[in-house]
Amino acid sequence: RVQVEESGGGSVQAGGSLRLSCAASGDTYRYNCMGWFRQAPGKEREGVAAIYTGSGNTYYDDSVKGRFTISQDNAENTVSLLMNSLKPEDTATYYCAVVPLGCANNWSFESRVTEFGYWGQGTQVTVSS
Image (cartoon, rainbow, N blue to C red; front, side, top):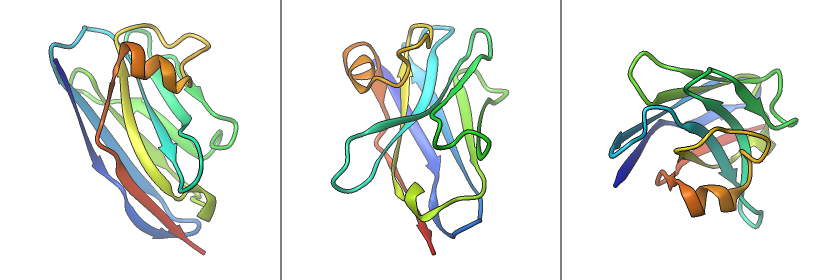
């Protein structure tokens, strides 16, 4: 069993920054596709960013390119998401996802995580105008 623990989040004004962290532990593979999804009220869960911990390759949704940066931390299977220039439309519950596969072109598919990986419990990010 894999445990996924998130930290960070909170409330900030538009234009501000926040950092989210995610750590996977337990029966983990050495390399994983780790990333973040978000879900706003009344909307579907969508992929935000991902990183393959084997190569360091990163993937971003167009809505966050240039503003968000995902990176690996020194601890194994730990990643961070630095969110700059936050907008009110970034308000959502953010979920860390861990899949014991490469990220590939379907990294943002929610079903891929549900079928093959693990979800964190979610952390709230609120951006006020």
